[in-house]
Length: 60
Image (cartoon, rainbow, N blue to C red; front, side, top):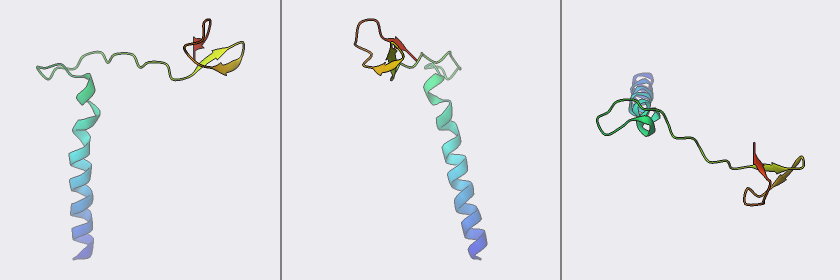
């Protein structure tokens, strides 16, 4: 009985989490669109990490 409950719970979590992967890349009608590019979180300047606001820093 425990195995059945554990399996049902795991299946419920797996099914409920699946649609959330594609949600950000859909338009209002539900069709897939190209995802917008993510902003750079790390940049480099002269081979070292630097703030992306620094002049001359390039995103990695």
